[in-house]
Structures are given as structure tokens and as C-alpha cells.
Image 1 (cartoon, rainbow, N blue to C red):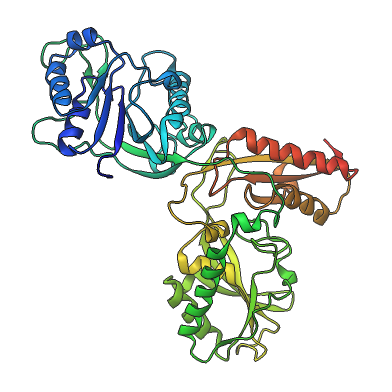
Image 2 (image 1 turned 60 degrees about the vertical axis):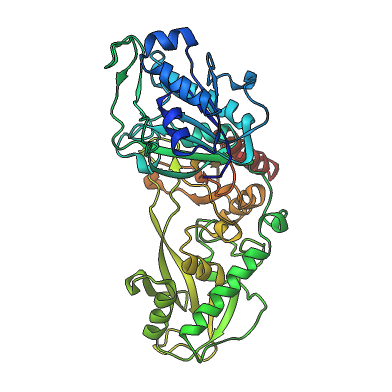
Length: 474
């Protein structure tokens, strides 16, 4: 917690949370607010007077009749805040759609009051958030925090168990439903359980840009990317003392990779994040088992996550990598793989001993293993990384015979790596009608606030490019 940070607390019921937080961190410059008027607050909560007196005596600002869904007009306190806190937002009408609307309007307004390095903190009951950490409620019945955040140009950076502030004098009492008696006899709120509640932290996050691969390479993937690839290469040779990297020059792509589906995990064109193949040849003389042990030792993974396969006359070493923990913003009937086999290296024959001509390594995959990353795009980013980002899909339907490579080239050229997670052709078993060919495009970003409108815009841009190439769309 930053000393002397400006903190805005919204919708704090009887102000018990603000009182406890200020007692536990007296250096905070706090603005505590309630939705009710001061008169209504004192009538409803018997202990509110004590909380107000303690806060004001400590130098905090206490404001009333502040609507968390209309923060665009908020004028309490000058400047922005390092922390904006909204615990267990609730309204008694509108159902789940009304609750989502409440939270979305809060995000839109709170972003305007947030400092560039600040964070928004929202505590929700178990299952409400809609992330993979929220349990079995699922996306359909959740508040859909990742999507609402992306619409407001915010991104989740942390989801963790919610813990109320620890103070000696004051203690937070979650009572928010009006019209019920509290334990002190006031017309306050009905207590609700907070066991298993989760704290969602969010920060500013820019919108992604639709740009072909390579056009924003310097902006997206700078020196950090190269440093991480070099460090991974050095780490591997430490486990193979007699091995030596033969060339700094990227090597031609391996034809056996041409069918891979995921540009964030494996690029079909194998151009890597900078538009060039991220390959180098390692001169090594050891058994396949020794090479597996060296990679497993460097990455600190079980050897069972590595396997040798034969493909088009090549001997390839693949590694099993968990896919990014995105939040699917679509029905659960659309299955998304949880893991993927990535090509790490290959040689020109299938002998038991690794060829003297050396092994060609994909340094991006090697660096992903060393850093325990699940997405190539993370190699160019510094923490804190966005988590539980939204995942969208659209199906591209084309009539007649077309070359798969031509369609995939268009998809990659239009979208670029910042938005496109994966693209692949569907098969007859997926319900593709005769005379048509369908491609499924998954959109997700690890560094930007990708919402459904931006993803749909990318899909429409692909459709326009396909039409311009004189192909017929369904």
C-alpha cells in the first residue's frame, strides 16, 4: 500500500469499512462516500455516527449521496486517486442485467478518476466475477467482470481472496440491503456471507490496435524481447556444456510447422513476433534423452511434458504447454483446448543420436519455457500482466474451393499478433455444409483491453479483405 495514497471508497453502507481501513492505515488520504444522505444514513445505521466522527477527526473527507454509477459528475476532492474501492456493489432491482449495468457504469466513471498508476478494487461474492477463479457459476450467470472492464479500457491484474482491513477499534460489517433491521436496532441492512469473496484489482489498459504483424514491432516488442530470447539460449547451453549456437541469423522455417493453428503459441508462417523466424541452430552431440533432460532441467518441468515425434522426414522435440487462462465470452458449448504441443526443436534425420548438423530451435518457445509463459506475446511485456482477458470467436464462411494458405495469409495480415490468438479451418464433423469452407478465428489480447466491439471490428476487416481478394462469403 502506498503511503499517503489518495483513496476513494464508494457505497460504504454504515462507513464501517472506511473507518477500519483508515484506522489500519492512518496515512491514507481518504474520501469515504455513501449512497444515502447523511440523515438517511444516521436513521438507518445506529453506528454510523461513530464512524463519521472517527473519520472526520482523523482528517478523512466524508461525502453523502454519491452515486457510484455517475462518477463522471463526482466533484469530491481534487485530482485523481491511487485506489478506488467498491465493496460488494448491489441493487435490489434489475436482476443480473441490472447488476452488470451497475458495475459497468461504475467502471466507466471510476476510470476517469483513477491515476495512471492507480488501481480499482472491487470485492464480489464467490462466483460473481465470471473468471476461472470464481468457481462453477459460469459465464452466463456471472457479472462478467473481464468484459465490463475491457469495455471501460481496464484490465484485471489480480484476483485474490478478499480480506477486510484489520483494525482494533472498528470492524467492517457487510450490511447492504435496505429495509432490514441491523443488530443495533436501526433500519440498516441484512448481513450477507463474505466467505470465499474475491478481490478484483483493475488498472488502466489501452485498446488494442488492428495492425499487421511487423508494423508495430518496435512499439510492441522491443529490447526486452531480444534479451529474454538470448537469456533462454544461454540457460540451455549451461545444461549442455559442449553445445554451441552456430549462428545469430534466423533460419528458414521448418515446413512441418505450416499447419499450426495458433499465432500466439505457434505462428503458421513461423515469423515470430518481430516478423522474422525466431530460430537458431544449436550444434550439440548427445542422445535424445540427454537433450530432453537438459530442456526439462532448464524449464523445471517433468520430462513427460516433452516428446519426440517424426514429421515430414524431420525428428522434432515438442513440449506440452498450458494455454493462457482467458475468459471465454461465449457459450460453454464452444470448446477451447486447455493445452497445446509446441515445436521446440528439430533436426534433419531421425537417428537416435542428434545430428552433427545441429538442432534448429524456436527461441520463443525456449524463452516461454524458461519464464513459464503461456503466450508468445508475453515475451515482450513487463509485469503486471493482464489476467483472465476476454476471449471471443467468429466464424469466417467461404463458398467454393479456396486455398487455405491464402485465407490464413489474409487473416494474419489483417489482424496481426496483438489481437488474433488463433485461426484454423473447421472440418465436416464440425457441421460445415457441403460446398463451403469455414475458418474459426479466436481473438484475445494479453496487453490490451479487447472488448467484443473491437474483436468484431477485426472480424469484419478480415471479411472485407476476403471480398477484396474476389472470394465469395456466405
